[in-house]
Image 1 (cartoon, rainbow, N blue to C red):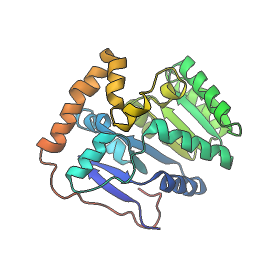
Image 2 (cartoon, one colour):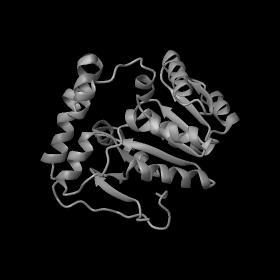
Image 3 (cartoon, rainbow, N blue to C red):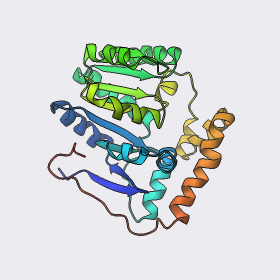
Image 4 (tube, helix red, strand yellow):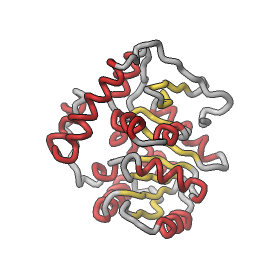
Length: 259
């Protein structure tokens, strides 16, 4: 197998991999006796890496940072590079659940409101009857120790954390040494969509790569800062701030599930 390739997108080392490659890496990660972290990068998280002190370092500490969204594709293309597959979480993460169901890998859900996470859990076991869902907990907790104890009691192979950026990545980094899990995947707003509490854009709009516009129209007050301010800012950083030189790629030696 070829080494895992990383693309430098505005200082964030984004992993260039396909769904098939990710699942192969997941198998490797589960075989190794230390926790592995999987984050995602999109225009919003890249913007946060400029505005939140230390967040870029937190992102780059992950074993994998997968590309989620058209913004990363545009940024890579502007550097003469190509991201082979856009792993949009809402489409991609159910495939991870399917794999976990078929391979007997127990999972745990953390994030969302009490209602959202309950419905997401119900949807998961309904869609994947063999899935070993050890438990779930909402994301509005104050007692981190109690949540960690609940997660660790089952020892999930895969922990899905959906607390929103930058909180979810920061929480994982702060608590990774206390987690009894093999792989931790941050999932953003996945539980909202998977639970059907938040509508997804029509398929034709998704094919046009305009799902962000649907989210903006659905919730303009909440999403305006991210899309009406954040998207132009990201594009300015990509196209107007000198990100037009050839992009360095960094193959990772030895293991494909390494930093």
